[in-house]
Image (cartoon, rainbow, N blue to C red):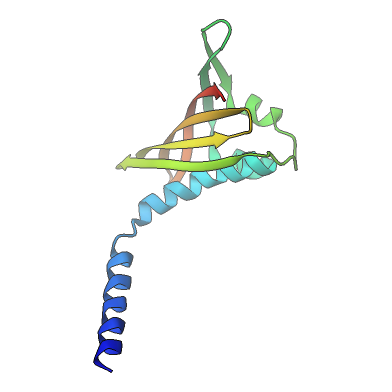
Length: 140
């Protein structure tokens, strides 16, 4: 009986400790990143649009010319097909923030290549939203 009581007390302590570690602000940032991921991966155009500031840009380096490319988010969203699902896996590898700015690193893996997205987010009008995306692609 003492063992059962000890185990129950230990479980309560662990649960309480784990709840204290939840960072509500970080969870809101992750939710904004998930709008991007789910909108992109599932062709949910409205959710994808909701993830970005209208002034956001996507920046990368062209594989052939090695020059920087800049695409307005409206052009990026227009290139996505409504309802088209992508056959890939996605991972948020880290999120870091200070006050009203954050960065999130997303890894999107396809069978033949991987995208590494660095998302710059801002808290605007009490809502986390992607201000810019910088990305690179690696062939497997």
